[in-house]
Structure formats: structure tokens, C-alpha cells
Image (cartoon, rainbow, N blue to C red; front, side):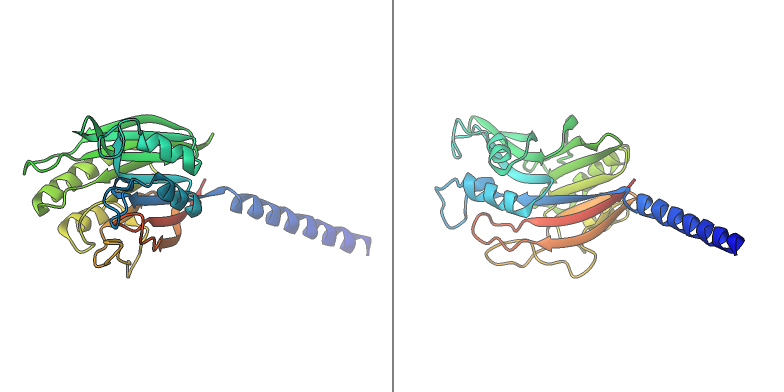
Length: 267
């Protein structure tokens, strides 16, 4: 009898040990919320002379995003305010301790481009000029390393691509893919790509990256008359999984909807 009890006790301990090990393994993951948003330089389309930083900041805060890729950012420009650093101000108002502004062009005495906001430390920031064979508005790709925790660093890239010419857009997508092929995974890409999912540009990108929207992607533009899916969150990494993809129906603040995705990253 005693031997049977000992065997039973041993079985229970082994079972508990396996369960504890599985539980420990299951907990070795991190959730991450990423947002991509073309903010139309914080100018609501229905109010041509208004710069409404507070509304954009409120949307960012409400989204509970950990990392945000913003497009159409003004810094010290005449139209938005010669003393306004839009990236810095949005980061402060929305609760992001870290930010990086990437200038695409000189504009009205300041700069115009994209920004990355993060609740986690940022390092290794870089702006890459993208090809512009058709001599349209210059475009850039911004990159940064985000330190989620000691043993988890991700690569984040943010961009806003040409809408005027398909071949120009494809040249920029090709350069983006080449640049990011040299970056460590996991990689996340936010941006206004200005092309639909069935375009040559996106088909080429989908060969290397996965979209947070798997199928039946909702329209992201315009916010006032939605008819196009052109804003994306892409990722690359075999330890990354999409938990949820959303298009936030914010119709006032910009001419684009914000795109939000929740990911889990296994360690």
C-alpha cells in the first residue's frame, strides 16, 4: 500500500512539474499593440485652417498602442506652427516617452515626414531615402530598434510611399524590401503605401512580409468616403502571431483611418 501511495505521489509531482513547465513556457511571450496612422498633419479635412493636435493625441492614447508609425508629420512649418514639433508634442500628449522624426522634405521653413512613437526605449534610428525615378515628392523609410525588454528587441520601420506613379511606388517598395532584408527579426512595418492589396507593389511585399490583415481588409481611406485599402501593418518573424487587426473608424481628425494590430511574440 505504501509503495502504491509513493508511486501515486511521484506521478502527481511529475504531472505538476510538467504542468508548471508548460505554464512557464506559455508565459514566455509578449503582446504588442502597433498602430499606423496618416494624420494629415493634424488638420481635420473639414476645417482647412485648423491644426488639432489634441484630437490626434486623444486617438493615439485611446488606442492603447505601444508603438505608433505616423505619416504626414510637420515639424516647425509655417502651416502647422513655426514653434510646433508635431512628433514631440504628440508623443508627450499621448503618453509616449520615446519618438523619432524622419524628415522626407524641407517644407515651409521646417520639415515634413514621418514619425515613430514608442513606450519602449528606441535606439539605432535611421532614415533612408527611397528611389524616386519619376521625380515625384521625395519619400523615405525610417528605421529604429525598439527595446521591449532585455532579451527582446524588435525592428520597426515606417514609411509613406508615392501615389502618383505605379512604377515609382514599386521602385520604393523594392528598396524597402532590400533594406529590411538585412535587418534582424522580428520586423514590423507601418505605413501609408498608397496602393491596394492586389497591386504589384503589395504582392511583391507580401512575398517577404505578412499583413496584419489576413483577408477582407477594410478600407482605410478616405475616412470621409472609404474606398481604398492603402494603410498597412506588416511583419516578419516566425515567432510573431497576429491576435487582432482593426481599422479604427475615426472620421473627423484625418483623411485616413488608423490601423491597429495586436501581436504576440514568443521568446
